[in-house]
Image (tube, rainbow, N blue to C red; front, side, top):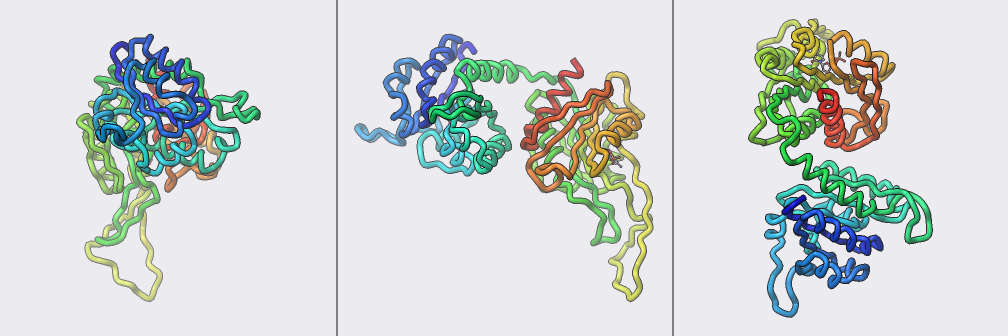
Length: 400
Ligand code: C5P
């Protein structure tokens, strides 16, 4: 952590007293620490303690009431390598989740150019409230790293989940963040990702499609980019967008177009993650003009689309690593295992529409990974980005 610039945000919870220890640890590890306190936090720990330990003035208000000088929150955002907010109260969490900016810390959070790490702290009933859970998921979705609260004795005298992670845990999470971010563990690797639905034309205005939003595939692309990989994203029709200097996106509409793009690029990639919801069938004939309404019931003859993933599995070299997805409504594991073998995958990510919060139109997902050694790993319900990070982490551990 030598020389790393850490901006520490402190909010008004009883755990704020522990931040004195955190500042000392970060400084001992060589970090430069600046701090912003919300006005409420000053009731829990003195700004004098915070400024003395950090060796820097504390930012509290938007402007200094004595001198009239404005505090430049944008400068904080440009200065820092990471913003760490600990403790994070339910109130600041809710404001962050909604883009509220009614104090210096929140305005700085919205201006940050670097990642944010938070350590929530609250009473157990608050921590398990659906609104708090929703806000934490929103933060994860906004790519904030959440250090989960721990279980134990709380200031209220109750026992349960909600205690801020210990200063040592927060310190180690920040150290791990810098270690991971140093180079990216997939630097030099090229990843092919398929995402979104495919549309199979019936005539010039109608098509057969599905409800896939493309979000999971795009979040997987982000998680790979965060690890330094080069990403080739073959995307069906979607509203998702992503811009990055290591990302190349090929937009397609039909399964056949997706197949052509994959066939042209698979050989040059070392990892494939196929998250697209490819239509299994397409109309045999595409009408050249809009089909007219008639008094009889029409019939559309369908033909099978190419199984793009199966093709990639059949054309996989020993140095290539291939991951598929399976969305099932029944016999999830059994059907997943069959696909894993049939399509020659290294692992398959299973999700079911039966799980609340998983599936097409929601921002969360609950996944299970089934690998070629028959190992089954279940993950908690999380944001799609967190699920994507879990998939990439699993892959990194598998290829090492
Ligand atoms: O066989 P099933 O469609 O359930 O398999 C799902 C997996 O196969 C997903 O990873 C999906 O992206 C991929 N797939 C494909 N081409 C198809 C059908 C599915 O790449 N035609």
